[in-house]
Length: 249
Image 1: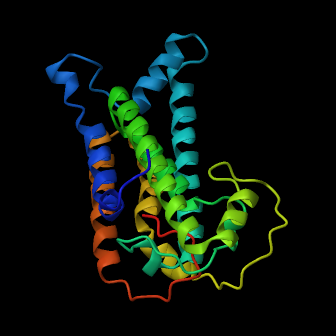
Image 2 (image 1 turned 90 degrees about the horizontal axis):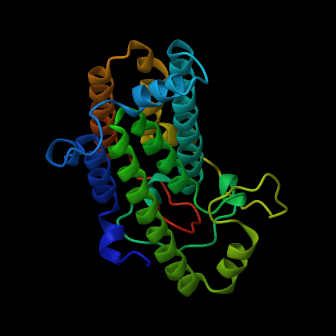
């Protein structure tokens, strides 16, 4: 069930292919499954057809929901990267230094994976409904495989301190309060914001451009944001890796 080292090395490429598949949704034309409209439009139509509200009210509500998902993606990604360090975040191999128990890692073990899921869930509003469903299912399975693989690796490398961390901090559902001592880690918020330009761009796209109802423009903005993130990450200066539990994508 857990991911292999090859999957971990190419995790970013696999995540990208999953997202591309959702936007492409080739089964719509070839098998006649689904419709070639955006999930945002489809949800607004379904809410209005159900009689719950009018289309003019349903659309802003759906956009607000997508914006909240995108904002959560930014929150988890930037805060996780600020404490973990971009050197570890971008590493193609699993790394084990010391148990990370600072910032969001005191409340949940996988803030970066959670942020990635929310980011893709926000992008799904621009995909066809069936494409959004396939993407979120595949992404959920793949991220869970990565998490299981990392846990086994880190338990073998860090031993009892990491096993105690596993018992103290939930895997995916953040706790609201914690008594876990804070690790001596200094977050780099500026570098984290720069390295996580992709989720920030997704938030701007969903929260700002959705009101244009121009899905072609939104798709272009998503592509530009993704391309910009690749360029930025390629030129980021190496930062000292924080004591870490995982290098997540």
